[in-house]
Image (tube, rainbow, N blue to C red; front, side, top):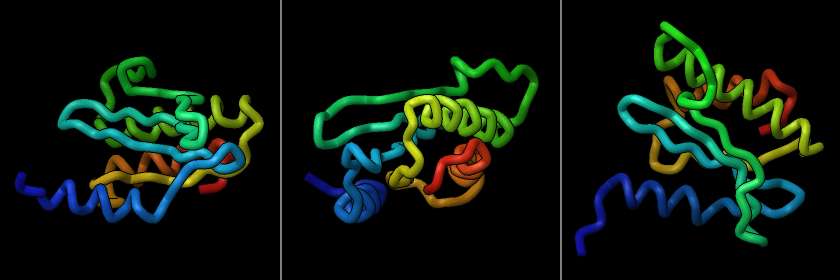
Length: 113
């Protein structure tokens, strides 16, 4: 089986991080149209919180603005869970554009990344 460049990047990034109960992992998924993020406790294998631009109502906005709104909404959910700090998992995506906007939205909500 051939390992693609994106799979190599994903393996390299995820080998260095793990989300524990104290600092859960904030995982990003980005497609051509949508972006979603979820907070994962890897020790228990549970998703603690999740948010997507489909569930976040932002009409007539660019994809970057929608990603920022998803970050803000997810940051509020994380703060409601009384979690102060998370480990950011960008997957195989470059930390630029929509991924960066989502991370900044989470930071603006008060979560330390």
